[in-house]
Amino acid sequence: MCRVAVLLAAYNGKKWISEQIRTIQNQIDVSVTIYISVDCSDDSTEDIVEFLANTHPDIIALPYGYKFGGAAKNFYRLLKEVDFSSFDFVSLSDQDDIWHSDKLTRAISFLKNGYDFYSSNVNAFWPDGRVHLINKSQPQVQFDHFFEAAGPGCTYVFSQSAATKIQSFINNNEALVSLISLHDWFIYAYARCHHYCWYIDKLPSMEYRQHGSNQVGANVSLPAAFKRIKLIKSKWYRNEVVKINNVLGATSCNFMKKALDNGYKGNLFLMKNIALIRRRQRDRIMLFVMCLFNWF
Image 1: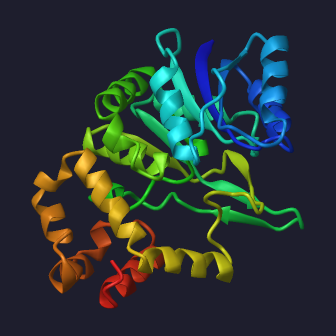
Image 2: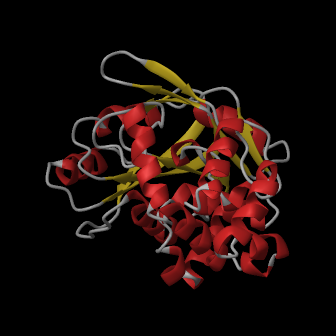
C-alpha cells in the first residue's frame, strides 16, 4: 500500500477542518499521514488540531506560534520541515475542502505511469448550493508555467523524489521563494522548468469550498473578476511573473527576456505569442487585453 504524506496548511479553520481531515483519512487503498501547520489563528484551530494529533496517530501537528500571513508561506514551511523519506508520494491540502474517496489512488495511478506531478479540475461549491466546474485541464503550452499555475494547489500530488528536490530548492533559495505569493504557481513552474512530467486531470478530484475567507477562490463572478482586474492593474501579476522567473533563473531564457521587456516592446511580444503562455482561450484574451492597455 502506498504511503502518502499530506501537507495541510491551516488558519482560522475551526468551522471545516475536522470534516476535511475525515475525507483525507477516508482515502481508499493508501496509507495517509497528515502533517498540519497552523498559522496563528484567533479561533480554536490550534486546540482542534492538538486534540486530533493527540488522538490520531496518523495526524502530526508541527510546532505552533508562527505567523505566516498567507497560505503560501505556510506551505513553504511544510515543504521545508516534513521528512519525506518514509513516503512514496506527497499531497497538498487546504483546510476546508471535501476530497473524493479515490482522490489519491487516482492521482497515484497516473504517477505510476510516467508522470511526476498530478493535479485536477475541481467542483467549486457555495453555501447556497451552487456548484461550478473549475476547468484547468486545457493542454499545457510551452511557457504557461511562467504565467499560471496548473490549478488549485489542493489537488497537487507528486512523487517523493520530486518533493525532496523541491524541499532542497526551497531550503537553498528560501529568501527568494518566500516572496512568491502563490505556492501552487511556484511548484508548477519549478516542475516544468526542471523537465518533470505533469498530468492535469479532467475529472474533478474534490469539492472546492467557496466562502468569504478564501485567499484565492473560484474566479466565476463579476466581483471576483473586478477584484482580479484591480490586482492586475496594480502590477501584482507582472511582479509575480518576474519573481517566479528570477527564482528559477528563467531570465536567461531568450523568450522570457523578450516577454519581460518594459513597456510596449514586451507587451507586443506577449500579444504576438499569447498562445504559448496561457492554456485557456479566455485567459489568453484577458492577457491580450492587459498587454494592449499596458496593465502587464
